[in-house]
Image: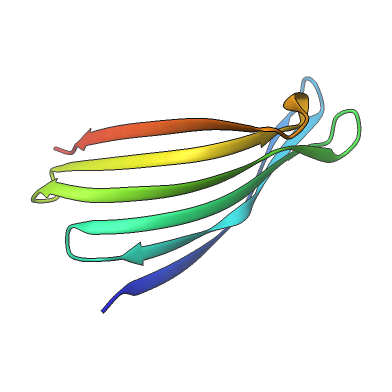
Length: 103
């Protein structure tokens, strides 16, 4: 059977020198498919308080995780679409490939 998890994301960073507060809000839905494979689906919103509080961008992504060898070597592939205010919220595609070796 599939196992699902929901993660709510609410984090902020304050820069004292510029008095800028940046927040990230959203959620991620995780799905364990097998002992070696998992998927995660995320929707994140990025905001700033300068000049006044506004949406900077939002991002949609889906990640595939695969355990290659005994919790030592794993692979994660994450395609995403980012919609930024400075590009009039038009989508920009990206992809991240992460290979992790844990000692």
